[in-house]
Picture (cartoon, helix red, strand yellow):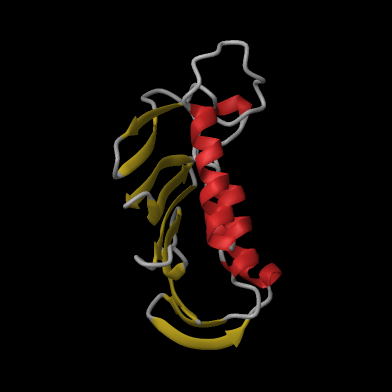
Amino acid sequence: MKQSFIAVLISLTLLGCASDDKTENLSETIYFPMKEYIEVTALGLDGTGIIKELNVNGEKEIIKDTLTSNRWLEELDFFKKADISRPSLSSSYETQKSADYLIHKLKEGEKGEVQRIVIKYEDGVIKEVSFFIKNSNLFYNSETRGVIFNQSQTGKLDHFVVETIQKVIFLKPNKMIVSASVVW
């Protein structure tokens, strides 16, 4: 039931994206609805377990827990932050569509932290969702990459990985990798 709700939500959003009507409400999204996708995914994970490996500069920690949907939202927060479905970004990204992929890439010269979002489909079901975020100024550089892998048969979240590298001028870089699996 929840899987079909996700499919309907994504389908309706993508159908809305295909419209050529120039009088559309500007608050409607023209990009993949990352925030909504993560929120629906988290609702479907309520009460499921997680096995997470947290690696910070080579120091590893394994965490096992059962999470509520709110806690899943916290775990998937990097993906929510990669949402580009805002009217202010409506012309900032190039979009490529095929039967297997939906790709949003920041246009040359446009300002934005989210550099790329890639959605991979398999038989019409979302198989992978990935993003790349880059933030830099004179004193600080940060890059974050993340990918969600869904089960082929059900489309439910199977596991995800988020990697962040932060470099502050004159300091050694910090590298954090979170690898987590859902325990159904």
